[in-house]
Image (cartoon, rainbow, N blue to C red; front, side, top):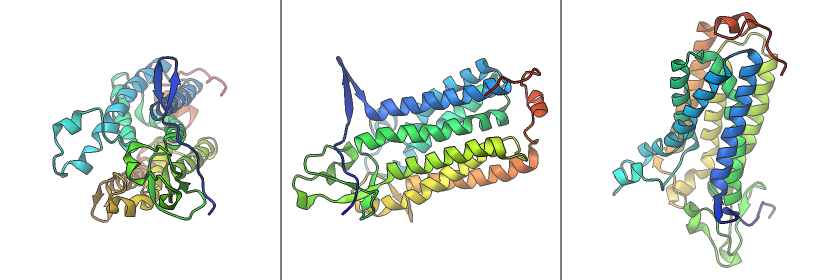
Length: 296
């Protein structure tokens, strides 16, 4: 059967240091996303200093959100208590990281008088590329496997492969006990890469775009994408072979993603009615410099 298979790379030894691939690529994703945003901030004449300050707060918010936004999905589990909520070990959520980072970044942007709707739009490509690069770490450590499959983009385990700890129950010692599973991190990476391309095209070619709508496109698309992809993990979550909590007909992640998608559609409609069209003149009204912007 045609499928992907490769030895996991859980960590990289650099001298006396051991670097987690998951953490490394999450950090790279944030750094590249921040660079993309600051590049657009500079091009359009907004305050780079204010945007940099907002991004610093967003980084802290993303780390906290990635951990704390997993709590609702586990709160009713027997034995789940405050130690689990505030401990460093446990589940981390990419949607929670996005939520925490956006909330903290917007809070700081408001404090430093960076106009919020242009800031959201300028952040949209960075949010998309953050998922692309962050998921590379998940691929290297082989995390977020789903149900068994014969799909050619699935991941086939081999005897002795040491995959991410959440999948210890799937590890196998002999070929007869090894199977192929949905590689949902890869699916998410591919979808996020397509989304990045769409956002970049819309940013240049959507003449009637209103402030905030580019961010709303990212939010609606990525939420719907995660909702659909996680159907590939639903059966495994019900069987207990992956750590996702099941809440009624969906996983906890699916409920969160559905809320994000609906919120994105609502924002797209709201910004379409309540925001100005994106123009150079309106950028100046939102706080950009009156001089001609720098070349991209």
